[in-house]
Amino acid sequence: MTLKLSIGASDCDRIRPLIDGAVTIDGVEADWHVHGVQQLFNEQCTHHTYDAAEFPLATYLRDLEGARRYLALPVFPSRHFRFSCVFVNKAAGLKAPADLAGKRVGIPIWDMAAAVWLRGIFDEHHGLDMRAPVYVTNGLEFGRTADEHPQAYPGGFEIIHASDDGGLAKMLADGKIDALYTAGAPSTYAPHDPDCPVARLFDDPVAAETAYYQKTGIFPPMHIFALKREIAEANPGLTRRLYAALCDAQGEARARLFNSAALNVMLPWLFDHLLESERRLGADYWAAGFAANRETLETVIGYMRNEGLLTTDLTAGDMFDADMRAT
Image 1 (spheres, one colour):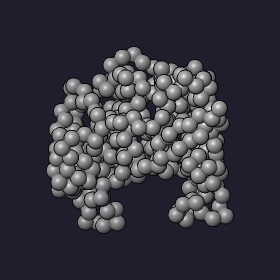
Image 2 (cartoon, helix red, strand yellow; image 1 turned 30 degrees about the vertical axis):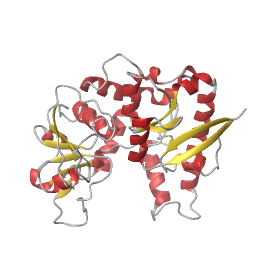
Image 3 (spheres, helix red, strand yellow; image 1 turned 120 degrees about the vertical axis):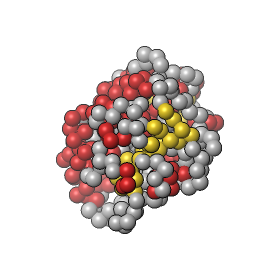
């Protein structure tokens, strides 16, 4: 019997082969719903609309400690080092993460994985106590008077909830905040304009990110795939089949990127970028499976526990069922 599932996802190349039908899920009739990332997360984290969905990693872990609505699959639709996503106002004179102590640092969403990883990495590896900055929340490009989806703000941090028009992007350009941790670059960042007041904190983020990877072996996951627990438990073997399809889709995405007959994206030297990425990170840098990602997941769990976003002794194994722990 075919199981019908509604599935929410972003239009990323790792999932697109499932959306366009090149890859299918054994025994499942999938009704795919494609959204921009923030729209998807706001919908799923607030209303739990879909049976399965691409899910923000830190929010998933918070749910695991609370309502436990979902079981995860060790597949990561989004990974990103995020050193390239730290922006500063040039007038603040900030040159390194440690310089952010006592400074006003904007964050659009407190538990966004980009911010969780940056707070943890800078604390562990760059001498910036995660509680040392003054954090300012707001929309990235617009003033906001409430969180876009439910948040938890741990104690011990100085957090200001702003609502300035133009959001954190304009606040950074105007000097109302000194720095910004974000996922997407602010509209006020114009790298080819020498008079732009906004710059990246790291002059060479690729070098900094490569050094971090060589030291830790971690390519930070931002998103995970999650299935409603009640559906997983009512359908033994479903997590295995969904996981297999997601892995097949990721393999298809890699093959499409390496097909140089016609460039898959608007990057003139795409093939060489791919080869360089594998030279720096190894061929399996976007690894799926529990064993390959266990240490990475324990690291982010530790960061969340250190800042108070998690309060129990849950482990990476608690994210998955027995079938997924065997991957």
